[in-house]
Image (cartoon, rainbow, N blue to C red; front, top):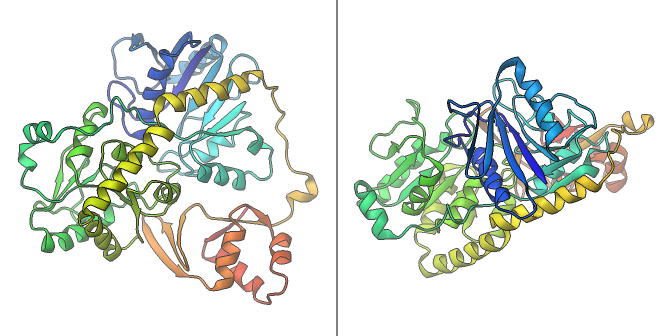
Length: 447
């Protein structure tokens, strides 16, 4: 089997810019060592090397640039069996059914943005042989939004894996020797996310001010410079961009990793990498982080406000033996369910099915069905019992639901027609009012 990847990361080689780039590199390296895989290639606009083509760790790298890149893609499709498309800004050309099977990888559920890359619209924009989704949350979002097509029949849900040879707990002696400047800091909180990307940077300054009163030597490490509103030279320190091979040191030296995204995380590579290195995580329940926090004991969720965040951090720091037990359980889950070798075997099994399957023609819903109004839960919300938080252009809106609205929200987690909703709640006179309020507040979306 010949497997290729098409990528448009900000940088994929020699540095990997973010979890998506690490995922592609780690999977490609693992594929190259598997029996039955004859060749692995990565085509990208973000390969920083002098040569146009070269081999590194069993991977064939090919730089593509300018208007000639379409020709390069067509040539690669004619030579490989599976073309994995990992794009957020680049639109894959429609090339028909000849050559390789085209597999779209849904890395996030951001839709049709003009100021940043988006994946959801790309997943709906071609006649894919298959779509690989990293979580049930991402799968449900894509299925809900594209109810009008047979796209959902082509989705394979395969979580991201973690390379346990790259991410593991580093011994304290080595940490103390290499990072002696941090020895007196406690607690050390690690925020390995970009600024101005709705990753929760808005909480850092106030969180630092609250923590320093109880923990005078608290330190928050960031990987990007902060803006003037967030800067706090005594508490928040920028360590610059960190290479993939060095991430384990920062995860390991930290007491807690802050994964405070208020965007709909389709998976969260940061969370599983941190647990693999033995460090607990604090997160909010946006996107797949809700599921990870329910499954993995050392990933703790809290409401997206400074007080609950502060309380949860202190609860983890005071966890003692129970925290150690939870971490042992959590690392077992990572080893069992997110081991990169196991994940890649799942990929290969999916590829074999895809290669055997016949191409399905793209089909729309029956015309009469097209005109029926539908409702689905917005992927931009986090639900805490009766409280709902909505991510809105970098800020958060909070709403309190009544019993009926809560039940409607649960029922519409899978897209429903308006008639289906009305029939489900036929004895309630306030159902129209509930639908109007939830959709007016963008808690429900009309699709």
